[in-house]
Length: 403
Image (cartoon, rainbow, N blue to C red; front, top):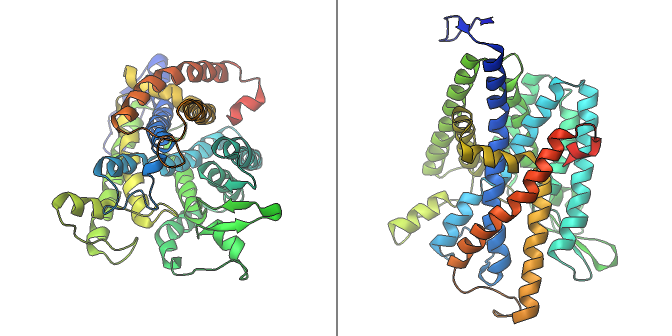
């Protein structure tokens, strides 16, 4: 088969059907690899949250109050939410390649409602069993809301959609000074959209808007538009190399924009100040706001994510990347599984040894975190691999695609 190319690839490329299938597989495996990568580094952060509750502080990236090892651990795991939301948008675009717009919108609404329900039931009950309940509206809730918003937005022209996504991501920090208090008109809507707060519910319960959704809607929109780089007619070897080059250029441009804007110190996040040491100055420079995610936070994390996406596509087939793709093939299964395993282990430890730091059980040495990680990652891989294979094999079971 002959495929003509352009934009620096003018020569005709001869490629066999087997080679073409390999290119197509690489094009899509890189997405699962990146998704799997952020899932396994997320495990580190959740181990920290379970075994080091006594070390939690109001701001986990405050360079003044947080130990450097915990600070940089948090910086690395900051990749997880932005990358996962963007890949959700990209995945929606690919889903639309084989479905009508109405079918894609229906899928987004159904999956979004399911994710919201999972967050306020399975995941809330995993984190807390106290009454009255506090419903933690976290990243899974935010992704669900974003999917429902995207279901409506995909009917817009792509140029308008691009302008909207960029305007939300780049401009939402202009809204930072708008603060409402409970009882004021619009407080509930604003707390869900842009203000991290507590919403009072009936019977003494509360909802904690951990992930205000407005900036995340911008992220899922831009991820959706990035899906156009992965269309079926862009699956030749030359297209793959061109896509990798474009992704690298985009990722490094985002990181450069982050450095310039952060150095100017005028917009995009809270100001930074020089610390007492070079290390604390660096920590202050890269300490960014996640709740809601600032422009600079998204430039930094998504810039790294885009670069990783390019590198993973170029290195497709490496055994470690293939293993990561297994986690990425069953992300919701892994997410629920690892939360319940961690919470079960914590409660067992609490029953055996009781509170060791105030009212919580905790480990004294951060090196235990790495030991737990080394043990749990291969243990969790086994059921995740089983479910990932089941999901790929049994496409006739409709509900599997939602996990």
